Image 1: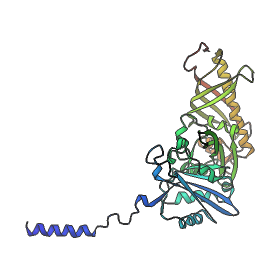
Image 2 (image 1 turned 180 degrees about the horizontal axis):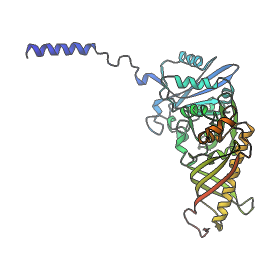
Image 3 (image 1 turned 135 degrees about the vertical axis):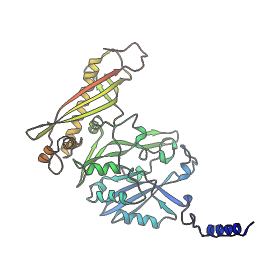
Image 4 (image 1 turned 90 degrees about the horizontal axis):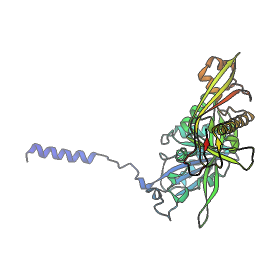
Length: 387
C-alpha cells in the first residue's frame, strides 16, 4: 500500500472519530408520547390533563398486550396552562414528546373563561405540536372522557377523538374541527366557530362489564370574545343539513299522521348552496339543498311524492329549529354572515355589527329542497315505491 493511501486511511479514521452522530437524541423507548390534552378551569386556576400513550399497545390495531394500560392520565393545576404542564414534567421520569398530540378537549368552564383563546394560542405556538389537532368541548368530567378506551380494546390511537373522520362516511352529524380551521373561523365573519360537543355514551357492554364510548352530541359555539353556549341533541340536527361535508345522514319521518308509523331514510351526496339576497341594504338568504334518498326498510307501498314531501318538510324543520336556537344564543350558527361577506362585501360592511350581520327568524327567506333520486334499496319483499 502506498504512503498516499495510508495517509488517506488515517485521515478518514480521524475524521470518523470527530463525527457527533445522534449522541444527543433521546431514544424512542425513553420518551412519553402525548396523545390528548384536556383543559378545565376552577378557582381561578387551569387544570391541565395529559393523556399519555403506551406504545406497547399500538404495535397492532388490536391491543398487543392486554395487561398493559393503553393510556395514563396526569393532571396538575396552575395559573396558566404552561405552569400546569411544567408541574407535570416534574412528576415524570422520561422526556415528553408532543409531536403525536391529536386532540385538545375543553370543559365548559375553560371555554367560558376569557383566556380560552390564549390556551389555543399556546398549542399553536409550541414548535412540536401541529395545526391538525382536533378540538372538542364537553360538559362531562374531562378525566372520564380521556379514560374512555376504543371498543373491543383496540389501540388508543384508534379512538374516536383521535380519528373523528373514521365514522364520517356512515354518520356525519357534526363536522370535526382542527386548530387550523378554528383559527380561520375566528378570524373571518362571523368570527365564531362551532366546536364538536362530546359526551360519554354508555350503550355498550361485554360479558364481563359495561363499556363506554365517546359520542358527538352537538356543538359548542366559541367567538373571539366569549363562549356562546351549546346546541345539543335534536336541536343541533340542522347543522348537518347545512354542510357540504356531510357524506351520509339519516332522517326519520312520520307517515300517514300515524304516531306509530315511521320511516327512516339515508341522505347521501348532499350539496348545499346558500345565496344572499340584498334589498335596500338588507340581506336575506335562500337555501338550496340537493341530495339522494335511500329507503332501507318500510312496510306497505309508498309514492315517491310522499317520500319527497315528508323528507323535505322534516329537513326544513330541523334547519329552522337549529337556526332559531342559534338566534336565542346570539350566534350565527350557519355562518350566514360569511356568505354575504364573500358575495357582497360592500353591503356586509354597511350592515355588519361586531363582525356579524343582524339576523332574525326571517333572515332565511326560503329553503328549497331538490331530491335527485329515491332508491328503494335491495328489493326483498313485495312492497316497493311507486313513482
